[in-house]
Length: 161
Image 1 (cartoon, rainbow, N blue to C red):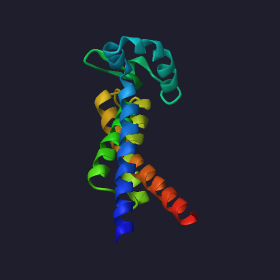
Image 2 (image 1 turned 180 degrees about the vertical axis):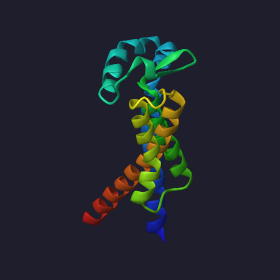
Image 3 (image 1 turned 90 degrees about the vertical axis):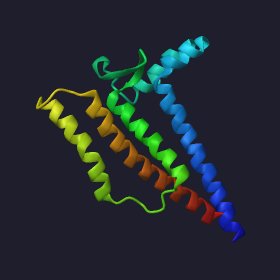
Image 4 (image 1 turned 45 degrees about the vertical axis):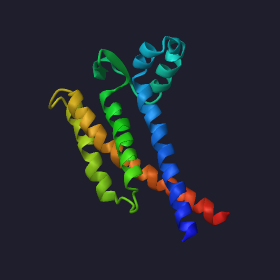
């Protein structure tokens, strides 16, 4: 009984830590707001922007703005990271116990793939709203897989030691 309670406490700390890391990542997407609040952070801006260029095309037409500040990633990437953050908050309240199957992954990923294909085929124009929504779906299922993978690593590590 004592061991089980101790593991649950560690598990909650683990979930809080993951959520905090994802929050910092999502907050850095809107680094211009940080600069507005802390002007000295402007020295870091080129490094943060270059870092995000490694994971996003940063096309000016697809960048979103919030309160007049521009994001460092496109609308779809913003949706993906925001989806990961929202689900990480949910896991702090109610941890994910079951692993997600491939069907669920396909259901959550298909709208994003379809949106990209249809826009590239010029069947309709790019919409930041649909990009954010499809990114939210993909980011949420992506977090579930990452969360389950990290849990497996922790369990394997405990078994070895």
